[in-house]
Length: 247
Image (cartoon, helix red, strand yellow):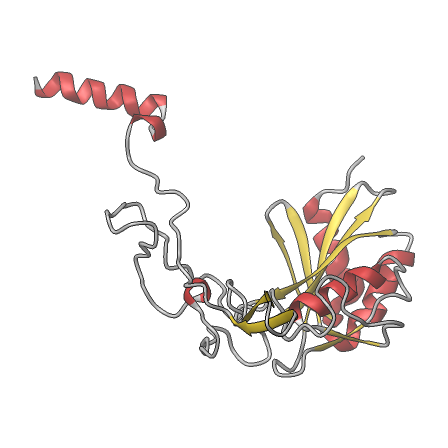
C-alpha cells in the first residue's frame, strides 16, 4: 500500500528534525530542502533506512532561480504588434544579448539549487530532495555519487548546463557542450540566442567564431481568450438563463 504524502512528510520531519530546512507537500509530491552540509548524511539515510528505502535516484537537475516567476508575456490579451509582443518589454532572458546584465530577483545565496528525484519501490512513493548552493558566484554542493552511482552523469550535466560544482565528483567534465565552450547555457543570464556563431571562412579556410548576429525576440506562445471554448457547461447555462431574463 502506498505511503500517503502526509505520512511521509511527518516521518521525514520526525527522523531528520533540524537537519531539514523545510518539508512541504506540493504538486502531489513531498519536497525536502537540506543544506549542503547535511546532504550526504540525509541522502544516505533516505537510501539505507528501512523506513524510507529510496533505492533509486530517478533524476538530478540544476535550477537557476535568478529570474524565478518573471515572464514578460503573461497576458490574456493579444496585440497586433507582431510576434515579439511582450506585455512588459524589458531585459528578460528572452531579450538578453551578449554583454547585457540580468538583475537577479532572489536573495543572495539562493540562486542555484540541485534537485534530486527519488523513488522507493518498497513503499511505492517518491520524494524530491533539494539543496541550495551557499555562494551564488561559486556554487558548490557535495557529490552524491557515493550514495547513488547513477548521479555521475547527471551531475556532469548540471555542471555543464548550470555551472554547478559537485565537490568530490570523480570526473567532473562537460558532457553536452563542445570542447572550449564558454559559459553555461541553462543559466538565466546566458542569452537564448547564444554568445557566438560559427561559419566557414573561405579566405582563412577554416571555421571561425564571431559574435552572434541574431536579434532576440520574445514570442507569445498562447493567449487564452474568454470565449465559449473556455467556459464550463455550468457557466454557459447560467449565461443563457441571464440572457433570457434580460430579454
